[in-house]
Image 1 (cartoon, one colour):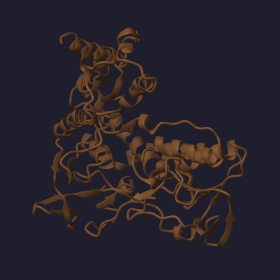
Image 2: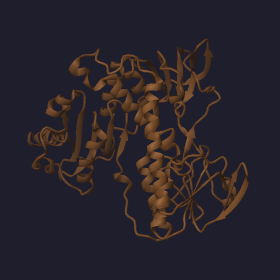
Image 3: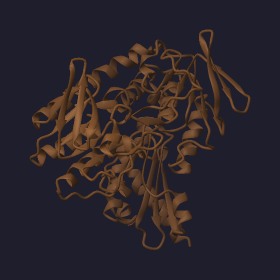
Image 4: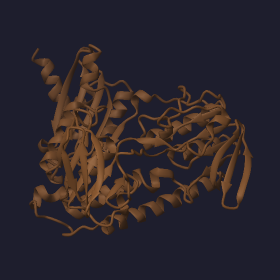
Length: 456
């Protein structure tokens, strides 16, 4: 098997194939392994978030006062220092893992010569490799727009945030998806005046509306201006800053602008036509439920196939694709994949939203617990979080869990286990959780929901 790309999807595909006793090579265009996930996307942004939370003292300001800071003047160098350390470690882990499983790594630009032959080009020339199976896991790159002239200094994309020379006083963020909202939160906590422009009527449309409303409240509380239902018509450098013109004839100005509207499949060099594989206008490759493309021995996994574009899901897709290639039994249910959005406070959810259940005419009830009413929430100084469980009114089966608050992505996994095992809300009522923990929120939310039923 040849795997194109060494991000989460590529790594897991290669290791699954190697564990199946096959000869495997990973071809990587960059000079380092790990793909966007380790080098410019997931790991850097989550590490930067951790550095922001620590240095700003945000999590303890409710205890020690709004003026509490670990470091008074936080620079981009402060944020980058921690990021570079984590990136180096993660790359070393990836190299060791592939090497331990006897996966060959080849650096160079890959392109199809025919459906079974991959040409790898480097500065020294090219070499052709052949394989029975190919997994395309090349990931994505930030989308470009003629309206937004990226210059890498004052007008940047999400891969360039950490290369900014200084923390801007005012930042415009174009795009209210996951990436745009995560960076909006980080800069807002640093005291930056952020203006968020999104063409849709709300942020994060795939998440539960009550949770998104709570996030929007926090953003406004940190002086974020949200321009919803607005679209940028042009962007231009102005002196040492940037001016953005909106379709509605409004003008916005700031020290810098982050363009975070979508990502494009990294397929430009692949010569997909030679393999008989097609991609859409955004560079996404269509696949079936087994992650096969229209050419049966060629699979595609990870961000290059589109939504949900989560590192955790990409890993699973890579593993499943390699298992299917070599007829290994594999079980996975995309309906029970969790979502983690590293905003401040973070959001995590699994299962159905209230809106989806309403559309499907499913009778449901909701139970909510607030961090501020839980001892651990008070100890941590997080009084804004909440946990919401949704369950079937008649069978009491758990249908969804939605959390906003620090630790949400970890806390969700308790609900995930119950939901996947088709447990009921009564599981939380009958279970003793350690005290004081945030896990107690499940019990409090369960009582809240069950008590509503008792009143009917």
